[in-house]
Image 1 (cartoon, rainbow, N blue to C red):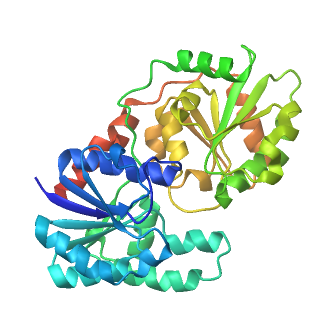
Image 2 (image 1 turned 135 degrees about the horizontal axis):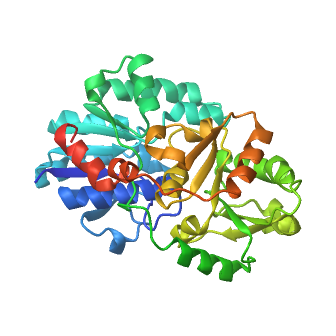
Length: 371
């Protein structure tokens, strides 16, 4: 069994965002098929680590990203445990990764969740050109890079001339192996929890609302999409908004309660919401990487209405009719599609979707040639 060390430089247990969930599940399933050790921060709940050893070696503050003492500490750990491969989550600690490789000779892989400079450029951070230079340098020096989307992989190959044979896809995975059978029961749970009338359609939006692309998408629903839906006389529906980090200025969406909207906050049982919903709304217009909420929604059997930008990274052919795309600038078309689909019986998610995106399949592919 291969011995793998992963450096995860922030708290992810328990997870509270799509990115944290991605790391948590990736490591859980990687730990089933390798002898895995993870170096991270003390703020993680180690009892949730499951099948791997979690070492709180990184400092709490930002200084962990430039802590020179880590060169010696991680190098010693690599030699002590005879590690075959190190996977570094995100490119930020690449300077450290390559110093450790120089001392140990260990295979060094970077797991990037986005083309990071593009994400920060889209959210208006002034220092994105510096990150662009650093990120490209990181990819060129790494022994391999895991990309969350085929688009990101192709960008690295074509624009930055990174060798194709060291660029691998590592998509956000799912834990279900087939279309869920408990959607009706989950709907009853959510209807009862939020006082939704039996005949009302449930439209779901979820995400970490402190993240600008998600907040922008929510604002689009509030200001433009929902007013168009309200023009359909007799259309009975509720838009449920889930996720932490809603700005105080929006006052838990209390001002929208008479407009078919309910704010459910952060939900530890978000799976129940996915399965209860008739449709998932994904009007995302910025930000990088795959939208984990979209991948999960389809896995849980809920049809997604998405902008083109919001659907980047997913294999659309595997989705069948569970993913319906609208041009980014066609707000009316988005609202019309939501109304149209709400009147139709929803199909089951294709079996091929589960075969492609299940975590066991993803890890098995990586172990064949990447790790």
